[in-house]
Length: 435
Figure 1 (cartoon, one colour):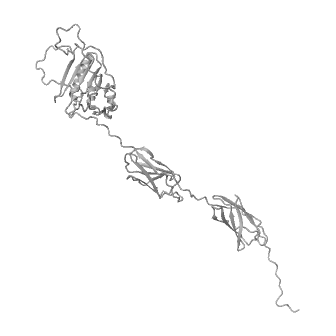
Figure 2 (cartoon, rainbow, N blue to C red):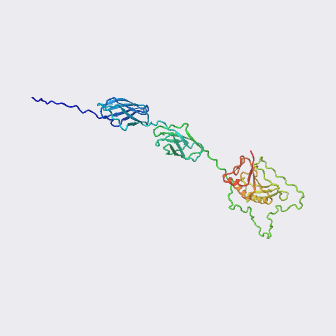
């Protein structure tokens, strides 16, 4: 037999495909427009697939096959998506060309959508200081915003010549504190915000109405505490008020032990058995007084008035008049119209001696018409010399509106800060005209 040439052959069938297909890598998610809930998901398989399978999403998402690419890459259109949500992908009924079913990924495949972008404009919540009556000494201004801000952007300006230095940020970049230049008294400042953005780039919504604050008015200066100060104050707080310039070269070796001699050394040798009462002193021309005149009915020596005179080196005279009901000092005035403190203090000391010797508890201090000043320092000297007696200072005859030291006659008496606490603790009373 002749051998066939070429030789006869046969080929057996290829081994059947029994390997199950798989998903290669994670599905690739791409957001189309999450504000509308749309996106795409691309799935790559390990081999050619039929188009019979489906995928589903949880959390109300849906997937619809769009195209196959190279028989093993499928693209799905997604709907119903929301921001910041994780979706699990479930595969069903997928087979390869040989009919092998897809092995489901384990663990399950997922993808997560992006967080919702910040599109809300920030606002100003508070500004400190605010309102009216803000201290002129304020040096800091703090602004609190509704959310974290971009600290590299934004400036504030104030009107009326005030500047604000670069801020320091606190509280998670929601509060900025600025150092201010010097503020003025009684001024309203308007704050202007420019170029501020939050961390997402949203521009600040400017406050409406604009933020403002107003500083307090400048305080009034204290009144002059001493309109007529003593140019040569006495260092001794209580010296001899009137030392005798020419002492007696031959003093009496047996002085009178009586410390309170009769103020009238030459009384009437034949006094009337029924002396007439002394005339009642005239009532000052003011109504009503701030306090009534303090009087007593302790009889004085004799029935007539006694007058004592004290003269200063500049020939200013103050007098003491003693009656049955009053011890009155009439102050002498300097050329400037202020009360002469030298003679007033001498008269006060002598009045205290007379009052204590006769049981009186007050001294009436009369300031004559034409006076323009009773300084706080003079009042202090009078109080120091009063020995605890009440001093009633009468300003009724002084022209209304004049400034007597720190007392304004057309208002409630006002004492300066330097002497107020001192004076009000003493027994000093003021009488003045009511207007």
